[in-house]
Image (cartoon, rainbow, N blue to C red; front, side, top):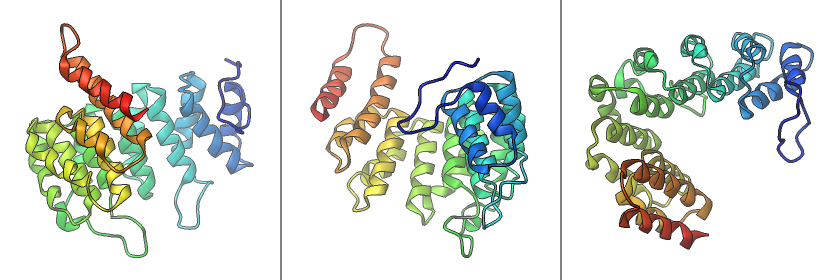
Length: 272
């Protein structure tokens, strides 16, 4: 339990015991914040680590100037990475947190954990539909983390969620529209919902192009492979996207490597 795990360059060296102890103490919020990240980064599944992270989800001491809960955010992210389904109820409870970023982190972790039981509470965050999905005055975000919610529902949802997700295809924020398109493709399997993602690959906004690349990689959309490789963006991101396409294609093949798989691998080679 006390062996040191691999570290990021320049990051403090820790053991699991030290990370848990740092998270449980209350004197230094920076150490606690880092410890929560560290436990998630290395997927520590020790019962003591999970217990400490669950306690951190209810922390009241670490507050930012806007009243948010930075430690809770890191704890919610970490619990998604440790991969223990027993934490799902606590993450669902976080969807009611007043902190936008805690709700976002919880939605992303529930998606990672394949928490089907979270579909109903995730849907509840979409109450009011597109009309209610507006900016919070004085804040750099909408009233809910719609991207994270829609992406989670794409992975976790069913036919019943299609009618709830579909209206967000017409949201004024491009990232929300793209998240809805990604989810609709996952829920229905219809190619028509990928068009906006592919069109985004040629838009003027680099950040949107990056986002669309990652979305297409997450859904493993093979017909977009060439467009992905030709997008004006960093090769590293295009490779991540094509890796997702390749993995999806390989999963679908039962025999020898297909011509399509070889084509994706050739596109990846061209970017190296």
